[in-house]
Length: 380
Image 1 (tube, rainbow, N blue to C red):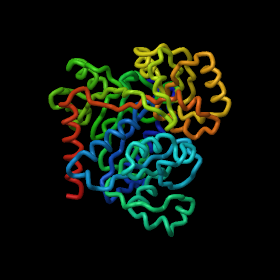
Image 2 (tube, one colour):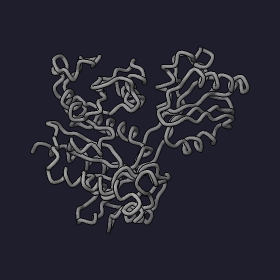
Image 3 (tube, helix red, strand yellow):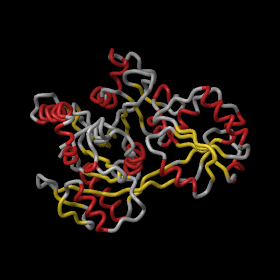
């Protein structure tokens, strides 16, 4: 009711926009190869990047796609480059965006590209020869790449001009959609009913254990009736079968941010935390099990570190000289581009890699069967 009354202009603008796309008044294009979209209906913080990485790992380990050329297309939030750009491992986060660069460093065999216009980006990924002649690609730096045979779209669920073949929508366990509101009163950037246009809904950042009753309750809060934890399926308000799955975050052992490092700092009892992500509470909780967090430098999401930031971190290390500096994978992409970081700081800087896992092997099998089974049907 709040959204329909106090936010009526925004609410009805969204309703009209989707109606125009659904009825074909606004042009919608499809890709000639399978496209998998990982998105959400909220503003940030649902875990799109680690889930994108999970999709890439799933494809690389499958018999059908391990020998195919996989591409990831992202917007490249807060990058300074413009237009279509292929991302290479030695690019800077300023040029490419921190999340695309992170993905490229983890999966060097995968083509990673950024383009705000997803239709254009997919066209270049499928027809890389156009990069040499197209005016739209005149600012593209790295033009040598293979033709993509499947494209993973990072954060493209609201990009209605391109219809993805398979849509995965993420919902944060800690921020139920049923209790949220449209921006600016809440974090919803799209209508809750858009959930039902997904092929799979994944509830992210769940506790390690959820019993069947809690999963049924969660599905019901999403408008999914008769949810069966065995099949992981229920029925949406229009009678369509909907798959709902649950994932949790796994934190991996700390890894050096820079080639220059001193692993002795890993055995310190104290930690200086540097974070510029949407929500760092779970990370702090995890690190607190092993370290005393003596100082926390908390920045906004995708923060570009300045010389003053590095100076403040250096001052903290003088006070806690034996403390290890811990940061996130995403932040580490931007920290590597800071020229003000000397070897003394590099020795102490370690990142905490994360990956997402389903709450059970059964759910993982259901996901793999659903996704890979759908991909086998592409083009038939």
